[in-house]
Length: 83
Image 1 (cartoon, helix red, strand yellow):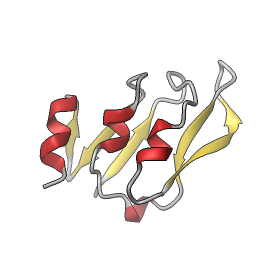
Image 2 (image 1 turned 135 degrees about the vertical axis):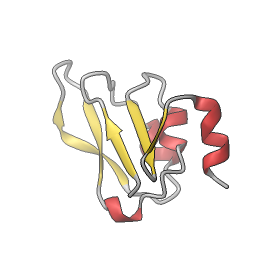
Image 3 (image 1 turned 180 degrees about the vertical axis):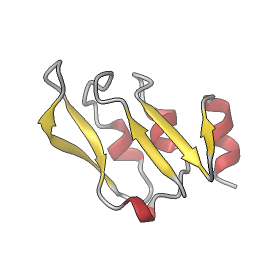
């Protein structure tokens, strides 16, 4: 199963992941992290394709993508995920 994990403590609420999600399943939470920023949440996890765009766009490295049990840890790897 594809999963996207957010480190809400690193997130600064810029919204880049929300903006670039092709499935439009990300939104910023109404809750705030310890630094006072909203952080992303997945509204419909079953629709996540683990394309890695959210991971690639995050300037704070606060996102981890798991595609079919493989963690994506290098921004170069996201190029292959879309195939």
